[in-house]
Every structure is written in C-alpha cells, then in structure tokens.
Amino acid sequence: MYNVMIVEDSKPILRNIRTLLGSLELPVQVVATATNGEEALELIRQQPVDLVLTDIRMPKMDGLTLIEQAKQLRPQLLFILISGYNDFEYTRKAINLQVFDYLLKPIERKQLAEVMNRAIERLQSRIPNEAELFKEIVEPGFYEELQLGDQFRHYGKALILIRRQPFAGGRELWNLEGLQRRLGELFSPHLCWVFPTQMASQFLVLVQKMAVEPYSSVYECFESIRRTLEAEGLPVSVGGQLQSGDPDKLPELYHRVSGILDKEQRIHHGVVIDTETPHGLGGLDSPELDRATVAAFTELIQSRGKEKFLLKLNEQLAKWAVDNIRLTELERFVALMVDAFSQAWNDQGSGYRLELEATSRGLLSVDSFEKFCQGFQEWAKQSFERVQAQNRKSGEELFRQIEEYVRLNLYSYLSIADVALKFHVSPSYISRVMKNYAQNTFVQYYTGLKIKEACRLMACKPEMRIKEVSDALSFSDQHYFSKVFKEYTGYSPTDYKERCPPNSSDSSS
Image 1 (cartoon, rainbow, N blue to C red):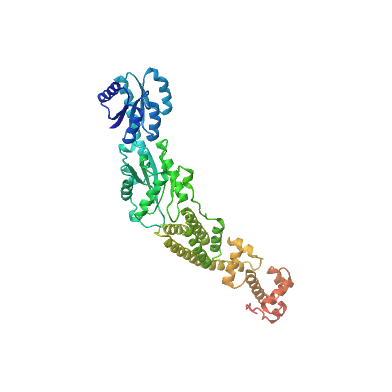
Image 2 (cartoon, helix red, strand yellow):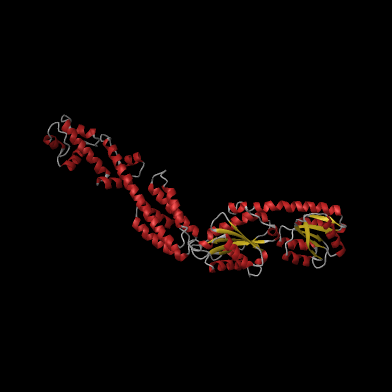
C-alpha cells in the first residue's frame, strides 16, 4: 500500500480527487491532505509519503516551491501536478523539477486512473532496485534476507560508517543487535537502519535526516555516536555525510566514505569525519612512513643485523604510539617488512611469503597496541632466525658446489665474478660463504688448490718443466707462479722437484 497526499486549496476539488482515488481500487491510501504548500511541507516532514498530488496556485507557498523544497527532504518523492489550462507554462517549468506527470482540471476518473497506474508502476520498480544497491556493500548472508520495508523509502537519510578501532577490546559488543539497540536509543524517535558490511570491522548506518537536526552540526552528531559507543566499551571511528541527490549513488558514497576512513583511521583514539565538508578532514595530520625509515629497516634485514633491527624497531614503535600514526601507515610498514624478509629468504616457491603474510595479519588483530608491539618484535626475531638458518643451510650447499666447480676448473682462470655469475649470486655473498666455510678469501682458496695441483703434477710428471706447469694451470707467467708457489709451500718449484720423490702422489710440502 502506497501513501498519498493531496494538496489543494479548493476543498470541493480536494474532496473530488479523494473520492475518485477511492473508487479506483488501487493499492493507495490518502494519508494526509493540505490546503497550501507550507502545511504540506510540514506534513511531509512528519510522516511517510510516497506520492503527492499538488495544485500549482496556492496561498502561502505554491506547488512549484513545495516540490523544490520537498525534493530536498525526500529525493524519491513522486509528484503529480494539478493545473488548469492557463497554468500550462508553470507545468513546463515543473519538468525541470522532475515532476512525474500532471493532471488538467477538471480531473476526470479515466485521466486520473491512467496517471496513477503509471505512478504505481514506477513506485513498484523501485523496491528491488533499492535492495540491489546494498548487494556489493552488506555481508552476503545478510543481503540474502534483506527486507527494507515501506518506511525505508520515505525518508531522506544520513549515511554513517562506524568502524571498530584497531587494537581495542569490546569484541563481544561488536554485533548488529547491540549496535541497532544503542543507536536506536540515541536517535529515538527517529528511525535508523544498521547493516553489517563485507568488512567485518565496519557497519553501515542510515538514519533519518531529521535525527541530525537537533545537533549543531553533522560532525557533532557523529561525535555523539563515538562518545556513546566508547562509554560502553566500544572504541570506534565514525565517518559519513548527509545523503543528497540521487539515492542510487549509495554504493559510490559508501566507498568514498570508507576510503577516507581507510586513510584517516589511527591506531589510538577514534576519528570523526564529516566527509561532505572540507574542514571535516582538518586537524588529522600526522607523520607518515618515510622512505628513509623503510630503507633503514630493510638494510638491516639484508645485512642480517638482527639485534640492531630489534632495538630500532622497539624505538620506532614507541614513537608511533605517541604520534598516533595512521593505521594504513602501520599496515604498510608491516607489509614492507614481509617483503624484505621474503626476499632475504631467497627461496622462490617455498610458500614462506604466504606464511609471513598470514602471521603478520594476525598481529594486526590483537586487542592492544602493546600486544601488537610484543608480537611484532617476536615475529621479527623469529623471521630473522629462520632466514639465518636457511642461509646457513644454503651457504653450506653453495660452498660444496663452488668447491666442486673450481676443482673442475684448475686448468682455467676463474675470478670471483665468474663464480658469482655461474651461481646467480653476488660476489659479496661468495666472499661471505668462502670466509665462513674455507676461512679464506676466494682468491686464496682457489690459488691454494692450484698450488696443490702443481705439486701433484711435479710428483707424477717429473719430466714437465716449471714453465709447462705454470702455463697448464693458467698462471700469468713463470716468475709469478714461482713466487706464489714459494709463498704456499716454502720452496721454490725447482727445490720442490728436487726434494719430491718421483711418482709420489703426495701434494703436501
């Protein structure tokens, strides 16, 4: 059943319209009548109306002014204009106000029936469309059973998003029934609707615009919500604005407000934002995560500076707590640390990154910032230990492969750059591996293997001349070979050959 209002200063015409409507057997009921625009506008404020039939020429406030002001209160109200032939110019102006249709006096039953049937079709077409607006916003299970009811269509509304503060208690209070009860009491006697959204930490609230009027501003209304919920142990941030214009833009407005809350929500103390006013975002500046800070932590991970990293992290977290950093900045820092540790792991396809992401998400859902700090430091400590353990294991394997490779290339010349290119690692990493597992530089280790091979050749092939041995092992010249040989064995090549028994396989000096 749809609610109809008739606005007509001529009582005989008003009675006639009412009688004709009653005879049409349509799903409508006349819930109010008025004799001028001012009276009608006040009635529209007070009760739900779907359709208004209004005269143009009336005392105090004419029909066009009524339509213009009523549209601001109820954008979806349908208006049918009643006019005489002499008022046709006014009727043309009404087109700009998106009047649904018009009736010419004297009103006939057939004419009224035709216009009313089309108006009812328009009203009926809105019902599924309104519910459809919530499909990409509300929790899927809630959407399947969503029934807005007739009253939902009759009011202009304020859109409000209520988001639970991070690192806060009160999870047991964070539910639809509790919020609906608390907000219903706050805004009584005005209607409000609460919807669980697809973001578990956020609820959408739509409330009659009239519920905001007792407050000095929209911001003050939102601040009242925040204070009320916080007093009951539920810290929140609140953002939103009065809906204006096309109600079909609800999803667009929802995502805009949600995006602003994403950007502005802090780790402590809920924010309140009227997103419709420029000053609604004022006073929210705080230090942002700078590149130098990220680079410093990333470098410590790359260089395996565990202890220094943990000390610096403790200092940084304490600073952010005082600064009340934006939640998005903290989340970004955690994500960058996940990226740095996964790169340090250097084992693609292991699933280690996914594991880091999952455990880091758990850190952001704890009930206090202190617990987050403790958990994050322990997470970083364990990540360091795993990376170091993995590096020890991979270092041993790499050293074994390097050793095998250089033994196969004793009769060639290899530089550390050649070996790094072969195994797809950096020369500095090769140097660290050699220092850890051979207790020598790469050059010393490689040269030592060459000298041992030279000793073996002199023992097994005494007929080879010193120069032939030097050339075979790719030394630059015989004099350099002799110098290096003596440094490693304590003998010149000639003395060594004389002292070494023929056909001996011993390569020691």
